[in-house]
Structure formats: C-alpha cells, structure tokens
Length: 275
Image 1 (cartoon, rainbow, N blue to C red):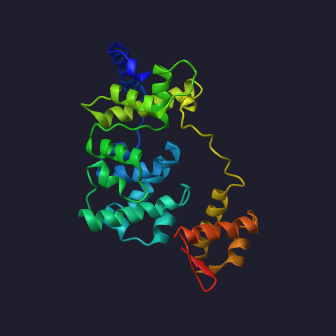
Image 2 (cartoon, rainbow, N blue to C red):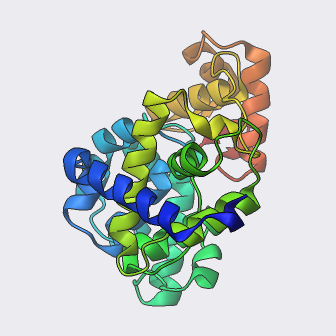
Image 3 (spheres, helix red, strand yellow):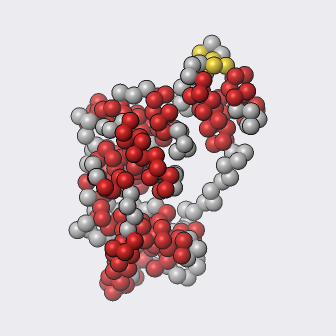
C-alpha cells in the first residue's frame, strides 16, 4: 500500500527519477520555451496522442496560432485544418472554445487555479492539475499513464491491480514540491522508459483499459467525415461525403454525421453539412 512507503524508499525513487532525467531527459518543443499558452496547447494535444506525434505537430500549430487571442479569433475550419493528423478532432474545437473563454473571461491569461481551469472546455481534473504544475510550477497531484507506470513499478511489485487512490497517495508522497514542473517532466520521462523496459506496468492500474482498434471504429468514420468536409471546402451533402470516404461504409458514415451534428462539431442546413 502506498501509505506504507518509507522515507528511504521515497528518496531512492526520487534519485532514480532524477538520475534518469539527467542522462536521458527528452528534448520536447514545449519544454524549450515555457509559457502558459504553450503548456495549454501541449497538454490538450497530449491527452490522447503519443508524444512523438505531438512533437511533430506542436510547432506547426504554435506558428499558426501563437497566442490565446490568435486561436480565439480563428474559425472552426482553421482550427481543424491545423489540427489535422492529430486525431480526436473535437479537441481542436475544445481548444479554440477554451481560448475564447480565456480571452473573454480571463483577460487572455490562463487561470492559475484548478477550479477555473476545470471549467474550460475539454479540461478535466487531471489536465487542470497538470496545467497548474507545468504552467505555474504549482505542486499539484495528478496521474497519467507514464506516472502510473513509474509508481507501480517501484511501489506496487506484487502483480495485483492498483487503485487510483493508492497511486494518487504515492504521487503526493513522492512529489518534489520545490520544483514540481521539472519533477513531473522527469517523472514522465522515467515512466516512459519504464514502460518500454518492463512491459508497461501501467496495465496494472485499476483504470487501465486496452486501446480499442481504430479500424472499423466510430473514430475512423468520424475522422473520414471531417477530412472529406475540410477537403471539400464548402457545405456538401451526405452523398458527396460518402463518395469521398469510400473506404468507410455508408451506414457508419451516416451515423458519424448524425453524431457530429448532435455534438455541435458539424452544421446541417438544407441537407448539406459543414464544419
């Protein structure tokens, strides 16, 4: 149990994390220049996308939208076009909506506290805590897959499932409160290495769920619809979308269209769809 971790074990864990970071810390574009906006964009991108892919797309997005104000002033189409290739397209629209709220309600400044951060579109409790840590160097406590891997590997070796409560306790006990921003960077890099070297211990986390296959999934159909609409550049009917996305069955595409309209990602007027 995490509440039995002794100080020596905590010190040993911290030494291992810092030692790995000094030797193998990752050079990531959002770490090179830390601003609240750059942290915000990177954290939303990283929610469901691999680090290497985000590292490729992040500079392009920042160049196109360098500030909250620039992103807030963009159109949904512009946000989606710049986001294209990262997947989970609704995040682009959440990011834009959050920027508009930050500009309109917070004077263009990212809130420092977790409560107002959680009120932003697309931001849950864990992302709000990570934003506070990375943007403002606040000693918040949160979990993500690499943190879970590092903690499970070191403190829960039995092979049994580990609860979020125990992992949160372990994260709080091991947190370097003097330098949380750097600590979390080091911890995530260490956990990423642990996952490769030790068959991903985060699979023993109680919240772990296998990633569903993309092929044949609703995500595949939704992505095909958005790509077809962006390529068309104007409102088009369902028949044209189905022709453009011929690799996905018509039934799945129509279901995706209905879902995207219901969620507010697409508009449907006069039988034609647009972003």
